[in-house]
Image 1: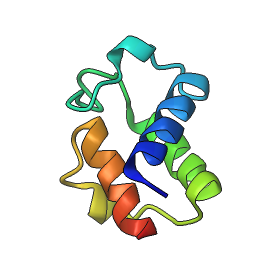
Image 2: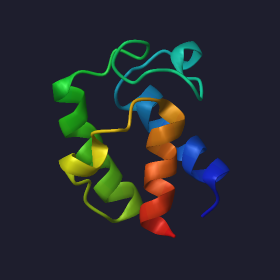
Image 3: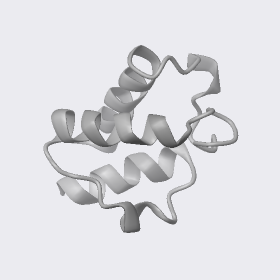
Length: 80
């Protein structure tokens, strides 16, 4: 799966399941500050990523993931 395909899937589930405004999703958008993702959303994200991409997110691996593009790159690194 290409990084572009991952970005599309992540963008889709953030809009549909987390109800994040599409215009707030940009490569350099900060997950918490710009997109409004809170701790409850992270729980949903873990479940959605596992269902969509087939792996579990380890919280310690997410410590340096701050932006939308970093999150997509993290997913890509787990898939490839």
